[in-house]
Amino acid sequence: MAQEPRFRRVLLKISGEALMGAEDFGIAPATMRRIAGDIAEGRALGVEVAIVIGGGNIFRGVNSSKIGVQRVAGDHMGMLATVINALALRSALEHTGVEVRVQSAIPMHTVCEQFIRERAERHLRRGRVLVLAGGTGNPYYTTDSAAVLRASELGCDIVFKATKVDGVYSADPEQTPDAQRYDTLTYKQVLERDLKVMDATAVAQARDNGIPILVFSLHNAGSFARALTGREASTVIR
Image (cartoon, rainbow, N blue to C red; front, side):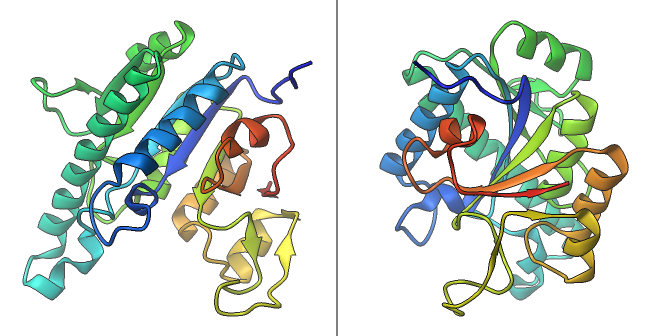
């Protein structure tokens, strides 16, 4: 018998880097197909899924000064990169048979819908996967902050933070083999220990709105559905 999901509506945060697979830049087609399949599997459980996607596989605004681009312009370039990823993810999800809508915080009506909370709510209630691009629409805010903001606006039960490791560790497990993995943490512990799972603004906003964060690895096929049903290694911040 299939496991029952523990949540009604979730916000899945996917970094742009997750789309690269083994590549150094851009989108790896096989990785995108696998991620789309994982999301479709989770949606098939009856969970309403909204997704905030990053753009770091294409451009990171925080690094814009290295190429002589002013920070605000760089952040806007990064927001546009998230739209590219959102459109690619939409196509991959549609190939799995999932109905999808893309909304952007930056209006671009010939490409996708503008984010309007009431319309986003209707899409989720009708069973569509909602891909949210453009970050918050403002410079100096990360897509982690956008994820918590949209989760708050849409009444999501939890934010699923997809990473390359299976939870939050006391140190980078790739550099520190004996790093400790935490099963649970409080928002205060994450902030006081400066654990690099999300930026401090996002964690504080999740705390203030009472939204838990579940950190898991999206690198293993089927991990999203397993996390939805409590069968995947993860760390919960609450």
